[in-house]
Image 1 (cartoon, one colour):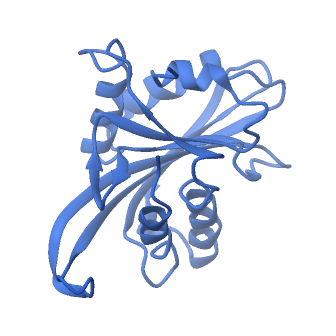
Image 2: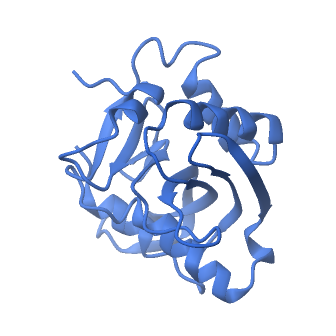
Length: 209
């Protein structure tokens, strides 16, 4: 189960004044499931208006209704094996999205399985959250407790000229649990939990038992 307060701790920082997102990367996929364009840039280089639009996309994933639209899954044993999806996600996180080969492999995996008939965009964000320690009275202290490095992915339908709409699917990796990283789990977002994209659950190696 996801603790809503953990997600709120992340989303409270997703504004222009407090964000620590370092990088944004992504691709555009046409109606025939071909990746037709990619981008990869420092988040700090974006103009304020672009930052705000992209922060809204990133925030939609952890801010979603917990344990309904945003659910936690453990990786299957197969998905956690060397050379499988968990290792790819860890590589993307560790390089801060700067390894184009890893990013292109990820985009191709999405394009090869995601089942929609319209063009869409895949946006990926990298963040490092310096988690402040809390005292015994639960008040925040100035010193850092640990660094939570993570990625957020949002899959969005395109509206007009390469303009992403609200996310339909996505995830946060690793899971943020008890104010710490849980490398064995992933939090997956489905905008319509009654009509989920099960192909994404399968691609990400989510244990659905």
